[in-house]
View 1 (cartoon, rainbow over the protein chains, first blue to last red):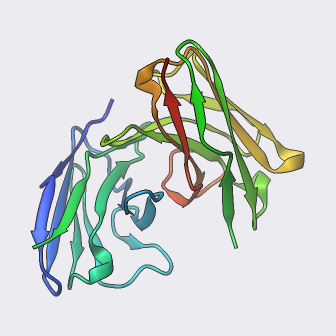
View 2 (cartoon, chains in turn green, orange):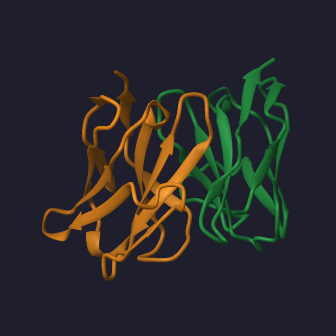
Length: 106
Length: 121
């Protein structure tokens, strides 16, 4: 199985901050990576697919980059609605998710 | 608009089975695969399996092989996930999620609201 490791597990930030979350795969997954946002009691919401493609309707402050084994999700200017948990997901071989990064208010 | 509406919360005893439904609307049901993903309390998302839109073939995670069955009722636009031999470790929220394509490994562009399952004696 391909293991996905996210860092950090928790991140404290303020509104307006630039935030970066990292996801590493245990082997190359090319660009077959998605990012989701999840709020408490809700289903995940797709933000980014194929490593850097912005899902329709998602604000442009979200961006993704990377290929192979290392990927990043960047929020250019954190907004109040962005405090949530973020997960990466690989879909190169079967499907596995990262452990999540909780973005908290500083 | 695309909607996936799941059946309600379940409480089961250890050893029992559960069947969760996922009713789709707002798109051509036969054009997209549906996957099932679960999330135990405080844990990461865990993929369980999927059903191919083209021919209703299924692929299951090895972890759940033999215990999970996913079926499709195309006439009703409903998918079902059946999980047997439940233990307390199966306590989780179960989600159906729409694949971007009819088959293959993909991201999920729409999700159901989740079905909580509690397994307790």
